[in-house]
Image 1 (cartoon, helix red, strand yellow):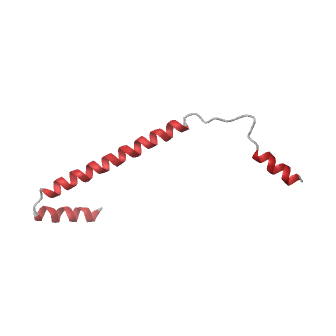
Image 2 (cartoon, helix red, strand yellow):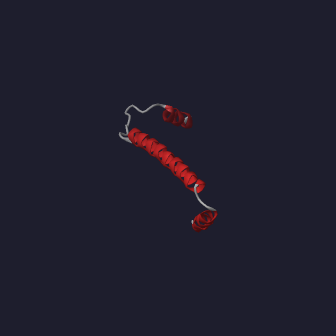
Image 3 (cartoon, one colour):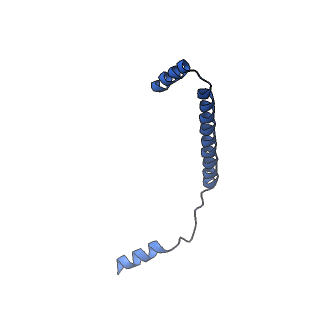
Length: 70
């Protein structure tokens, strides 16, 4: 019977609530940062494609060697 009483007590909502201020604000900021990060990545890919389109064969080989370093 004591175990049943304990599980009932655990299932009840607390009489006093604890609120964490700023947590929602932090989550919103993280969402904005993630969105900005994705935008920057897409922009860099676009720039890279534009640069590669205008390269000659020798410049493309140099670029591939540079990419292999990283």
